[in-house]
Image (cartoon, rainbow, N blue to C red; front, side, top):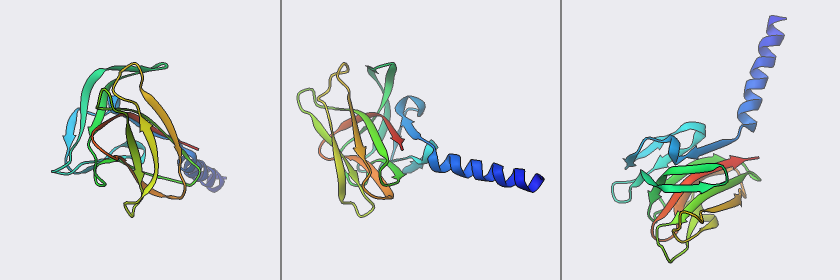
Length: 162
């Protein structure tokens, strides 16, 4: 009986890991500058370089529905800097973000492991009352880097769901 319970417990833990939702929110990360890749919870990593840093910084409050963000990830365009995660085909990745430009909307791009664009989502021009919330469907199992296609963007949260 103990073996059966142990097997069932293991199966439940494995099943929870396979079907678990994951997210990263800037509010949950200590304010700092990233110049290397640093692992976070739920399989995310924050990745910066000496030349193109990723910064978790305080910001004007941004409210979307019931969520209020008081910190953000700030980073410029690079195929090496951004928010890294693994996902499976068909999963939905939702990004809360804004452009750093007050008049220019920008694009967040998902680079695959070959550093090729696998998809994009727009982010509105900077206005804390108009945060973009955009969803992208993962085309294939793999590891992706959510980066800025051009210039600087702010990302407040990224969530992966089945």
